[in-house]
Length: 182
Image (spheres, one colour):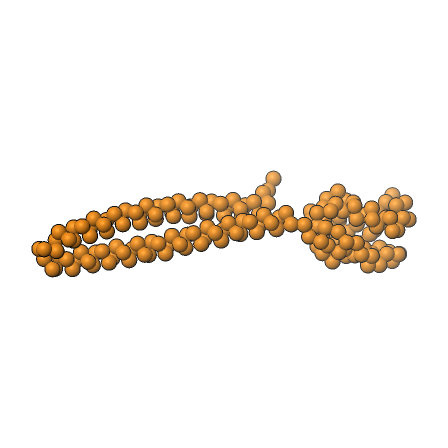
């Protein structure tokens, strides 16, 4: 059975989040190590200062370079954090969209005799189609006596599936057919 696209997206996002967390931890460890090196170099710099101005200048350049690396790594870490937040928000939105109930209006018509024209029924995307059929038959009871079926954009509608499962959208026109062979 094929996995829903949203689950695949969430799984892919979670894998990416885990990878970014790993990189974040790695960069944090690198920063800690770089800070220790800077502190060590600063101590050594004080000792060497007595000996040579040239050596001192070299150390200053090394320190500047390391500080720049730290700043670059900090920026990289911030970008990882933002990316993790964005992926979390995306996952939350996917979950919300999957579980969000939507209000629909559907319009029913009969195909041949035109008894029913644009009869509107309000419902939700999570409603079973059979519940709408029941409402329709309450308004038009003569159709209870026939073997009927419904189509939406030439697609057969399954009674015991939800509107969403039947791929029915808001404001769709549903056509009622009478099966003359039965």
